[in-house]
Amino acid sequence: MKILVALKQVPARDSQLKVDAAALWLDESDLSFEINEPDAYALEAALQLKEQHGGEVVVLCAGPERATSAIREALAKGADRAIHIEDDSLGAYDTLSLARLLSKAASAEQPDLILTGLQSDDLGSGQTGVVMAEVMGLPHATIIMAVEVDGASLRVKRELENGWFQHVAMPLPAVLTIQSGINKLRYATLMGIKKAKTKEVKHLTAADLGVAPAATVRLQSVYQPQRVKQTQMIEGNPAQQAATLVEKLKFEVRAL
Amino acid sequence: MSGILVITEQSGGVWHKMSFETLAAGQQLGRELGLPVRACVFGKSTPSADLAAYQLDAVIAVEHDLLEQYTADGVTAALAGLVKDLQPDYVLLPHTYQVRDFGPKLATRFERVLLSDVIAFKVDGQSVAFERQLFQGKLNASYASAAGAPVFVSLQAGAYRAETLVAGSAPVETRNPLLEASQIRQKPEAPFRESARAVDLSAAELIVAVGRGIKEEGNVPLVQELAEALGAELAASRPICDSGWLPMERQVGSSGQTVAPKVYLAVGISGAIQHLVGMKGSKCIVAINKDAAAPIFEVADYGIVGDLFEVVPALTEAVKKARS
Image 1 (tube, rainbow over the protein chains, first blue to last red):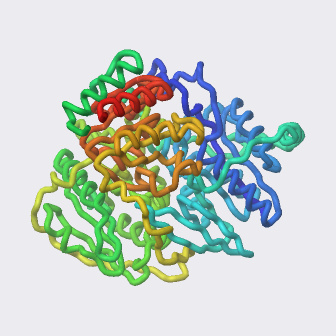
Image 2 (image 1 turned 180 degrees about the horizontal axis):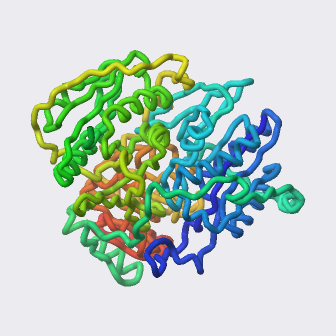
C-alpha cells in the first residue's frame, strides 16, 4: 500500500510572532520552524498503517529550502522517501492553486491513500486535503480519529461535534485529513536520523509541475487582534498576584 | 439572479445553532450591500418553515432521500446545482464540522477558495473585507475575494448573534436535486458517543482548565491541587486530552464540552479559537499564561502574565488560606 503524506512546515508553536513591515505576513527572521502538528499525526498514522499492511510512505511537502529540515525529520521517523516542491514563490498560491500543485505531484505517484493534517497551525484554512480530493476526483473524509484498511476499502472514524463520532466507509484511493491526538507521536531514533540521510528526496518546482500561481482570495493585511474585553492585569510577584486574585474572586466575583 | 445565499445545517429536524448565527450574518451583509438574501436548508425532509419566520427573500428546501444522512459527495452535488442555478454573489456557511468536510469541495467546484472561519466582515461600498484568524488566534488577517462571484465564506461560532435576526415572512420553495446513489462514495454509519459522560462540566460552577503550558503529565497534579482547593472541576484544552494526560471527557472546546461556569480559570492555555468557543460564555474568565500576547487574554476578565509553575502553587496556598 502506497501512502502519501502531505505535510507543511510552520513557525514553531511557542514563537513570538511579529508582523512584517508591509503588514502582509510575519517577520520570519527570528523564527524557528517545525512540522505542522496535525500533519505529524497524519505521518504517524501513515507509518502505523505501513507497519500493518506493508508498502511505503512518501512525504510530499511544498515549501522553500528551509522545509528540508521538516522532510528530514519525517524521513528520520520512518517515511521511505520524499518529494519536495521547492519554490520561493508559494506565497502567491492560494489554497486552490497550492492544492493543484500538490495534486499534480501526488497523481504521478498514484497513491492508495493520501493523508494530511486537518489544518495548519499558520493559516488554519483546513482545506488542502479536501481540495486535493476534489481536484484528483477522489473520495475524502475529514477530522479522522481512526483508520482501518481492508483490501480496496477504507473504514474511518470521524469526529463530529460535542463528543460524537461516526464511522464512514469508502473505496480506495481516498484522501483523509487527520485529527491531532489520533495516536502517539514517535520520536526519530538515532538510527532513523542516520538512515534519513540516504533516503531519496525528489526535488520539483512549480514550473516542473506546470501549475501557475493563482489568488482567488487576496490577503490584504495581517495585524494584532484587538482586545474585546477590558482585562484587569494583575501585577506583582507570584505571591502578590495570587493574593490579589483571591481578593478579587472573593469580593468582586463573589465566587469564593 | 444574484444576492446572498445562506446555507444552514440541520439533522433530522434538529437545527445546528450556528445556522441562525449565519443567517443573522447573511441578513446583515444583505442590508449593507443592498442584496436579496435567500436561505437554504437540505435534507430528506427539512424544517424549512422555521426559516420562513425570518425576513428573507426566499427559503429554499433542497430535499432528496439521498440527503437523509450527510455525505460530502451527496451534499456537494446537491448544493453545487443550487449555486449554479441561483448564481449568488456570496454563499455563507456556518463553520461547523460538517461544513469543514464539504465546504472546500463545494467552493472548488466553482474554482473558488472558501474563506473559512471568518469572524467578521467589513463592507466598504460594494467591497467586503473578511477577517479571519491566523496562528491559532495570535494574529488576525483581512482577506478579500479576488475572483468575483460566487464568494464562499464560512463563519466562526459566535461571530454573529442569532438574537439580531429580523423576523418576517418568507416564501418557501422546495427543490429536488438530481442525485443518484452511485455518485456517493462515502457510506456513513450511525453516529455514536464513545461512552456515557461521567463528568458533566456544563453544570460546574468553578472550572480550572489546564493547557499546553503544563509541559508534562507529571505536572498536572499541580493544577489538580488548585482545582481541589477551589472546589472546582478540572478541565483541559485539547492537546492535554490528546496526550492522554486527562480523559477526553474533561476536554473543553468545539470537539469537547461547552461550559459556562461562574469562574473559568485557564492555566497555560493560549486560547485557540477551538478552545474559546467552548468556554467564552463563562461569567468570569481568569487567565494565567507566560505569553502576554496569548489570545486567551483577549477574553479574560483578570489576567496574570507569569510562570504558572510559580503562580499556581502560590494561588493554591492563597485559596487554602482564604478558605480556612
